[in-house]
Length: 301
Image 1 (cartoon, rainbow, N blue to C red):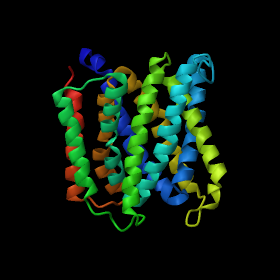
Image 2: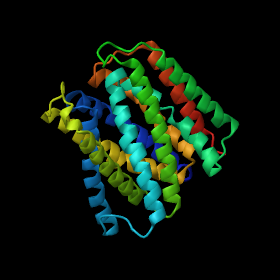
Image 3: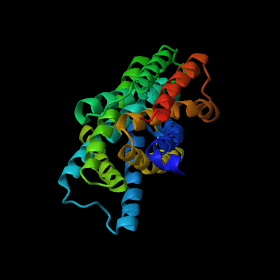
Image 4: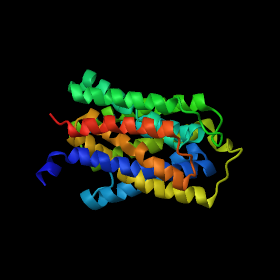
């Protein structure tokens, strides 16, 4: 029990990774039917609804205290960057290069977050933790060099760039969220704020660019919305809440890295649900990436 309590932030991060693995499957299936942008909009709207109701049950108010303007600013900006821009890029990368590769490349975000945390928050990492980060980079490099399957969008360069862009947005988002939580906001309230701003920005983004008209090969079908619905529960509702709880209880770099073990779970999941081929290079690179994350978990100074 003492071991669990001393590492509750790390365990929350690992739980987040499990949820995100299933989320990737749900949103990939949904994205193939209704498109990446629509998936992101649907899951943000549903997650916001679930979260404000939960906040009402727990705190007797639908939204957090408006007087804490510092928390609202940082958490709102975090939601816009991490959940709107970052996840839209990630979902499109799933369609371009596949769920496995997209998730592994996105796993670069702990490197970004650790660097930003060192510069802006003064968090320092030991030699073992640094080795873990380098293993993460090595594993991702191996996966990137693996050939993209023909069943995907045919734009591998765009897919890789989008996945890296998503990892950068995720890192910036988690750093801003940490700052917002440090300003006196709880994990659940912080998640509500992030989701509200992410939803507002996503709606403005779609309406301003008239993206509803860009549905040439997508259809608004029941299957796509059902998978988006379950993905919204598993990912932005439960997963995002646990991710904020994790960074509030553990170092940003360590919590971020532990959330990257999702790709190793995706190997059997994507094979079973998406009929992806299990390529040796992808498996090898994924395992190396996860070993790097595990190093960050077992080494607690």
